[in-house]
Length: 190
Image (cartoon, rainbow, N blue to C red; front, side):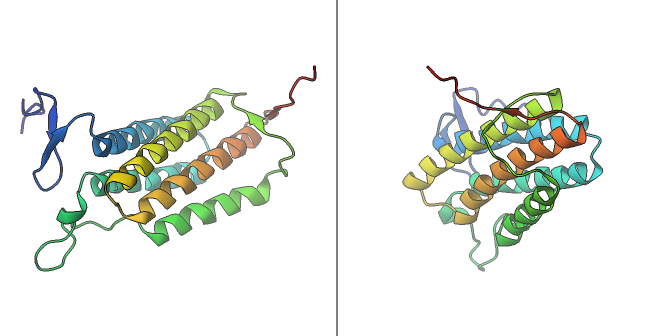
């Protein structure tokens, strides 16, 4: 199988099910941004020595591939005539969201209470977490816009929202693991 097909040379790409759309279509922007996020999560996973985080991030990367496939499948193409899921893979669902919430709660138990907003930075791994969080928020915004045009599975929106919370909490956890002081945002007074 060749990596290039030449079918996208005119600025279109195929959705799952065969429909061709422009490469700037919101659906493509949604799963393209999720793909970008997945790459940054791989970078975080490769940088951390926290084995619990590594395991969770690998699970999240797999779920983001699934989420991308879900976004690449128009609603009218989600199920086959026999009623089965066209993708034939486990979909991102309430259990996926519950996993993120449980991971956030576990990390939160070990972290000091937040009293201020926190500025991104302090260590490269922490900064990558904050970049991933910002990309996740962008993916969420684009996916919300897509949902306004073409309804999608609501668990996708919930998952992206919770994932950005997870990434923020992970940044705080890595700050603690690396014994770095969190940089509090304290507005300058005039």
